[in-house]
Length: 249
Length: 168
Ligand SMILES: [Zn+2]
Image (cartoon, rainbow over all chains, first blue to last red; front, top):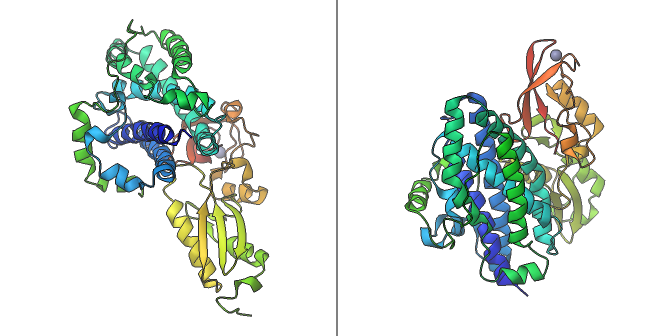
């Protein structure tokens, strides 16, 4: 049974959602318009909720409790991509990142709802409907900003240039991932990346944006992080923010 | 008649459902968690009553409040050993909200979600009727509202903002 590889894989999903949710929560009170303040708070809460479901499955597989995983790991023990830990940047940066991530989750969940693992299937089915709302929201915004004013367009293009290579790290397989693919628990990330790329490129072009010609992910190992993760984790130990979002661990 | 606390075997499951039907959704106090389809199952096992519930939106912060409310209610009718289980499958869908509850949502100023049969995206652009005047001359102002389950609309007919319980 590829149980250990499964646990490692689940942890990556949980950590990506958790860190991105945390980054998005930093927009509370700072979004350019009130509607987006509310929207980003919702996106953050959703991602933290999804992370929590994956952490629960991680606990079932390893016996390690979610609050231990979240509050008692050093930066080098986290398994999120660098893509999600980068500081929130400007509004265009956060929006572009959330869009790229939503589309990744979208193509991934579409496969996971048919996973041979019952728990993976159950969680994927649960969160897929919510992700439909995310993608709809962020893809509308990408278009609006990409085709908007000169300044909004320039900011979006900058964000995309900065984020693209980092986003590709989402598609780097873990060491024993083939076990999971062979058991039809997880899809092959190569196929997933093609699908993601087709969809993002077509939407970004329609939004007047040019996808950088970069094929190599900026980072490979999920054990390596930028200095921003340690800062985020430090900041997080002031549990207050999470409590403000009503998340209980 | 008050039963012995430990003698749950003599409790009729339908009485437990009746009691649970009085436990309101903490975010929408006019409808019960049973009517919302959040309470999925009630079972009596040995000396315990096991209630299965399912979250609406995964990140719903009201989950713990709901769990506690269920326990409290069953304690109040004399059941000591209450276990609340959270189940994910099948995932909650807004199609489970009962007809009666949909009418109550409207009186609360919340437009009920469309019955979507599993395909939410099909209904994204469908007009949503204003809960106050029933006009469908409305527009969405934010698909994300004050809580995860609500979207914000504006009625062009009666010039009032209102909220919709989102389809899920
Ligand atoms: Zn109206």
